[in-house]
Amino acid sequence: MSELRTILRNHMKEKLARDEVVASMTVRFSRSIEIAQIAKTSGFDTLYVDMEHNTLSIDTVCQICISAQQIGITPLVRVPANTPEYICRVLDGGAMGVITPHVRSAAEAKEMVDLVKFPPVGHRSAGGALSHYQYRSFPMTETQQAMNDATSLVVMMETVAALENVEEIIAVEGVDMLLIGSNDLCAEMGINGQYDHPKLKAAFERTIAAARKVGKHVGVGGLASRDDLMAQYVQMGARYVSTGTDLSFLLSACAAKAGFVRGIKV
Image (cartoon, rainbow, N blue to C red):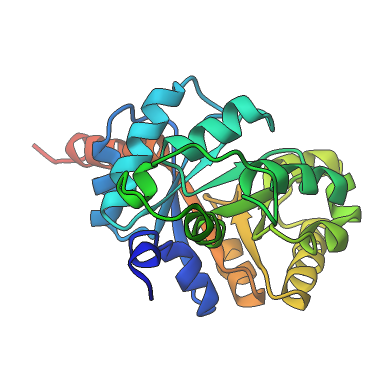
């Protein structure tokens, strides 16, 4: 492995290539870089900062991403809109991949590839020396290929239209993974909150089969409260698990301790 590729290692991608299960934490609450080390200490492989569902600034998001890079936690960002002002800036600012919401077709997926991947795969603009390779100077032909290999494009699969086009979407060159958003998908299918519904299981089955056919991967999202279903879909072939948010973990631990104290007999 070249020096550049050693610097640019995407540990999440390496685990997926070995068909291992990746554990991910979602960041919605934390505003400081310590959350990256907390994720590392807790045993997570990756974290994604969810800009779609909170008010974190791009600057804060990128500081968290750079911190994660340095300790071997793969930082992803779930962008609030599939536009250059979000995607290109978080990638140049430290993210090693983006999660793009509401993609409904192969044509839309190709638009995401154009923003995320450098030529010849996409049309991402070169931004000079980046934190990803320690602000060092390498030949552009080398950095662009290495960055393409190290950068993950994760497309949300959360609409009926996306499910109907799933085989075409996952086959697009440059798309690395589909992340099933169980909450939005259930709502779209008219089974809001019914995680045990056969329609959701069928959606996972179809998506996993499509991804496996082209050697790509599927993630489980929106099922943090259902360990049984997360395990079921991993056993079915999913390899990325979004386990929950930093806020939910904090609330759960706080509630448990407060409940313990209230239950002490005096």
